[in-house]
Image 1 (cartoon, rainbow, N blue to C red):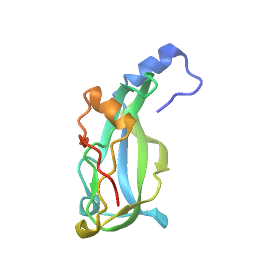
Image 2 (cartoon, helix red, strand yellow; image 1 turned 180 degrees about the vertical axis):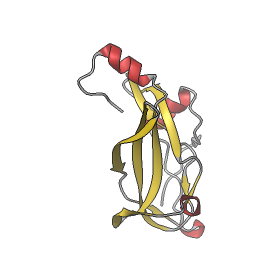
Image 3 (cartoon, one colour; image 1 turned 90 degrees about the vertical axis):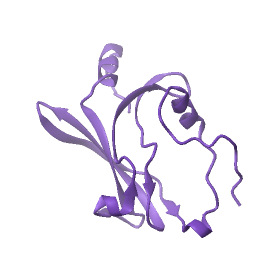
Length: 141
């Protein structure tokens, strides 16, 4: 998360804020406005993340929302919808909503294997974020 047109001091303050959080929901890859509900039937793991102040791959401070154990329970093509909320004066306000790129969830027998962890994921893990990181590289076929 980046704050545009903010001073360094304001940005530091926002990066420490406990008032931001993101909620992840699953949507059909072809029907972006249709949430797949109830969430617990489709997603496993934490679907809400608070703001983490972490260093990125360029060693710059940034605000990130981590979903380290989120997984999809059903086969198909999906997108994740991320809704950013801010708590102001006791009221929760939706600040922004965005969609991930589409991805495919396979049946266990058809699963081609896990992708190697990204450099960003490894960077976060090195900073103490709890994430499942594969130790060795496995090729996809």
